[in-house]
Image 1 (cartoon, rainbow, N blue to C red):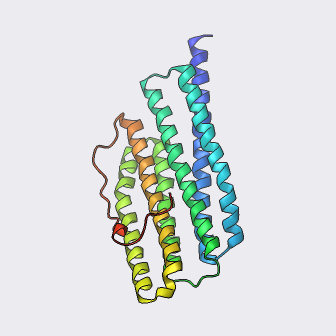
Image 2 (cartoon, helix red, strand yellow; image 1 turned 30 degrees about the vertical axis):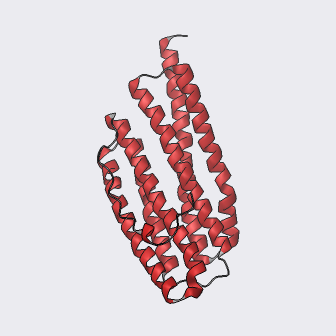
Image 3 (cartoon, rainbow, N blue to C red; image 1 turned 180 degrees about the vertical axis):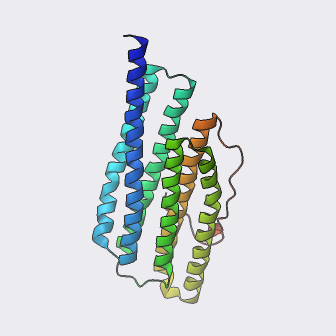
Length: 238
């Protein structure tokens, strides 16, 4: 087989893998958005659909990992192409975790379907979800367009996601301290909020992979974190 044919086969295989990864991104964004809507409307049927739909996201993640492993074994990519392959694998893992968080939100939505809302919390969670979903959208766009500036901006926006989470956490904690009857639903809502905050972390991870792809180096500055929840409640779903 000629070198031209080998290169063409590699490019075609890599394009297919990237396409599967971007399809994962679309499914994850839809799952998170729908999970927030199901939470707001206490729609257990929609939540159950999202929970089951996570299998498709998991399947695509497995496809990406299997195909990238084959590509590494059979094609021996050069340095630039190797970065692309490795970044796709990492981004796929980030997206798979975000799909898990959408599933977790849906499971808790079902569990608290008959519970009374803590005032303002559901609307705040919907807004927070929209914020981190936009981070994912922009992170994937930065990857596709090799946009270094946008990738760096997403990392900075994670601080705002943490601030939104911390504000909501303090509000939930106040409600639970003032009325012990709200502790059960408050704990569910806190876990949901923490899952959403973690989505922002994974969007940042995707942006970091874009930077690695473009520059050949991972960002060396430690991300600032403003998560104060360790002062109160237990760890979130992982």
